[in-house]
Length: 334
Image (cartoon, rainbow, N blue to C red; front, side):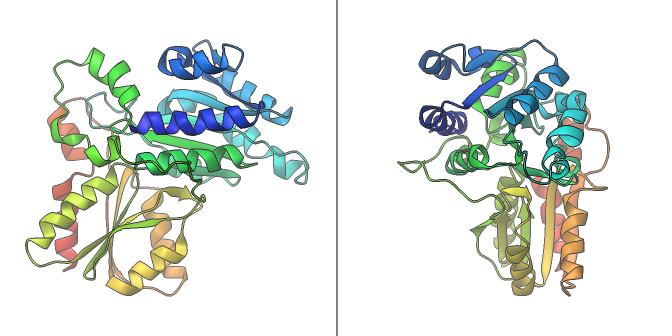
């Protein structure tokens, strides 16, 4: 399956099993035509371009007993509905003493590499994960995309489900490709992430469980989403120099699989965290704190986004955590 097909297959399975599951958002009837044909406009609903309104509607629907999957076109636009996420969805369960869960999935695309600038290419998963009560996931393969969607829908907590744009053919066809014929995606799209095997029947993947994509002994490369593939490319380049690099796919930004991260630090003694989010207040600092508070002191580097992402493709490539930046960081540790 493609990445998008896998997500929709999991959503369709959940909708068929439970009539409380429904989805709405901007242009969902166009983007997810198969779901519309199967479940009808009552459960696959288009919304106005008013993120604050329809995300808050999702919070209310979840509080009322439904299990909505609310789709925001880009995670950048979720900032318009920030209060609905961090002040309502995340806090109602605590304010009610656990008696009022909010089983809400917020589905959004994230990430760059397609020349759309800093207002449309953010990930923001660090800011989202910083708020108690919010689970944040970002799958890197079709199998993980399906499995994590099943677990997200089954969760009684708000889950922000992020899809990297380079893996989502729905996004690349609908926006990226159609409106940017001069952009050559070339080798930027990871083929194993855009299309791959998906188990039948679909299998849920626990939230907060990382997976090792490549074993190694000299240095551990840790990332999520498309960053995993940049790490795999870097590991292959390092191997030409005799360096054995492990690649860990976090899959969840929160909760973090701290056990697997600390095991990797113990095994390699060197950690490079590759994060398409911003340097400050994000994933790289959280992992560093986790290692220190558990008594680990590995040699440590981080490869992140340090400035506003530019429109110009060559400048964008330098700003995002590209393969060469990862290789350089790993070699500094060695």
